[in-house]
Length: 115
Length: 118
Image 1 (cartoon, each protein chain N blue to C red):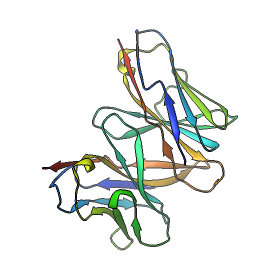
Image 2 (image 1 turned 135 degrees about the horizontal axis):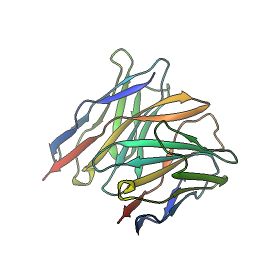
Image 3 (image 1 turned 90 degrees about the horizontal axis):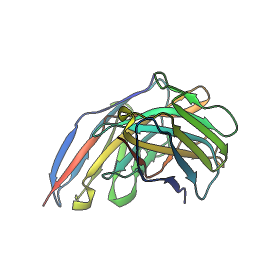
């Protein structure tokens, strides 16, 4: 079975400093992994996706994530935080059941950016 | 590309009435659409998977008679909350997977619908 754990429910950083949002996964096969961002009262926006190609995945808005199979991790990083990055971030792993890919969501990490 | 819309964005209704929420894929055809529910400050919970032209598959614990899902075309799925009660108040989000890439697993999400039942 597939599962995903986001290790921090809240992360606070100062504007201009690096961001690290941690995600560990469990999967019985080579998974697809995603990071999504959700601003208040909005839907989810895809930041980036890993599908067994390059292990370092670059996404939108300067975010990137590295797939590390040995550590079963897919941490999200950004070199310099902006105020607009304040939002909820979800790590997702896919599970294939009943002929359909389903998303398995982490519990989310709320990123706060301090001026 | 890959835009998904939802209508309405917000709805307030009286207890006992039914509410319909529409989910549309605007620039692609979606064989599969998903409906999620999100409680405040929590993650998304998958309610059901809807495939065009067939019955929806509901997750365990989701009442299929209460949450009616119809996926009549490759661009439209609807969720009807029947006989709504205050405990049904929530943020409902749909997503869609493009038909043109049947083996992909990327979902594109709508902006969500805030349902408040008085």
